[in-house]
Length: 332
Image (cartoon, rainbow, N blue to C red):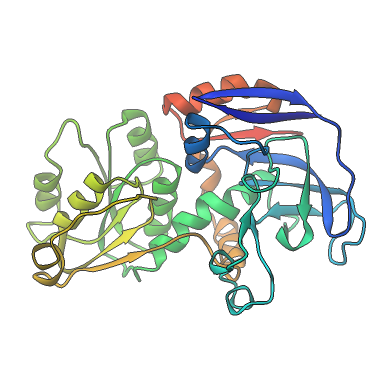
């Protein structure tokens, strides 16, 4: 079978591996859809990784050993969080808080291969009317944007600004629009800004061409946005977002960043700004997102490029270029 490895420094290699055998609770899944994620960039462009990457995937169960809940033929999405299953966080569905957390596609082989061994507890059944492609987006990309956005408790008519028009930012856009907000989206990539406009953004702002603070002030009649979201993961975006929210406004930090230097008085206390962070979806939200897809939220339109896994070189070339939405490997 074909499998992809990250060799580091932006290089990948394609390998011919043997199809593994199911053992104990490890289930053999034929991967039908696997999406490239922004968090793949660190290992891709950095030192690489020894395991097969891919933490946004879905497919069909091919064979089992001692699995108790799934059977061959079942269609399943892969929740990438491998946990103990018995701590308070696991019981509450907050899998990413588990102290024993490991990640499919990082700690064990993931979805960038034709067949993967996945712990049964990571497998979430896909309803018959939902495609594997859609399910692969729900269990990471859309799940991240969905939870991070709705945590701000949007009220219809709120004016929302989103920094980042990548797949997470557009997931946030779709969620905010579904909840009744007017949305401005900010990026430096015109391809992605055009995609955001096509998917419902009320205004799009190129930060290389406009004074964002002035543009948002005009858009909100000087009041400031009700809610800002950082979906970029850069300190400059967070600072810009903070400057743009109204008195007692909210800032949701969804993008992964490593540092933030702020003046608590000037940027938080003085205007009573509320900041929160959001990581990924929790288990009860899987069914909520399935329901939203059934009701018409077009998450599949975030996908702009589809490739067979054999065309991995082309797929990652487009991903690195960033003139794309979501890039997905499809195995029919």
